[in-house]
Image (cartoon, rainbow, N blue to C red; front, side, top):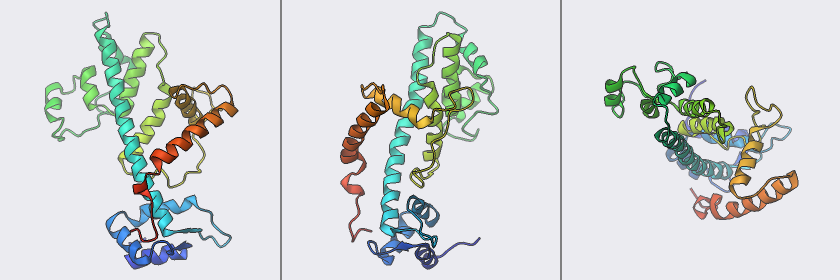
Length: 262
């Protein structure tokens, strides 16, 4: 493989069926030069049908619109994922402040199996945590891990406390999705490159017949104050909520393209 110049990128897109009717080739070159890169943008074409000749049926402007929506969605998701990660720490801290067992923090670490050599996010040279690393070394307490551990570590600490207390960890089954989503948006992965992919199934030890997206949907309905007791109720309620959000948030005027947009 070799790199493509701008003209080669345009030609390759055209050969794959992408048209330049809404957005001109000159505007497309400007967008590819200043706003994104070819490999990322062309991934959005997989949302469109391919003819018998193997060519896609969309305009370059459609790919641009999806890329703009994707980055807006990614920023929103990252904000929520970081808030969830922080909430896990705050919740566990609140439980520990009311805990009578002085050794509970150590018990949580042992139960979780979090280890310093395998689950540390930042490198020792990271200036934002360098002082903390020098202070605690390898003898790390639970609150040290709140600053040094990956999201998976935070989820395990949260789950371990609930297990020790014999309690059900609220919404624990959704943390896997949050972790995958957080990693994806942190590294700039495309969320909308292929929106019709099958939903992943629950991990081992859980209901193998229930897709993750159904679990998210049920929790979302619960958070909206609705009880999804049947598929028809769930579909109707979700549809109304989606249309409202769709009009007021997702398709903000600033994300729309006109024929002259760049």
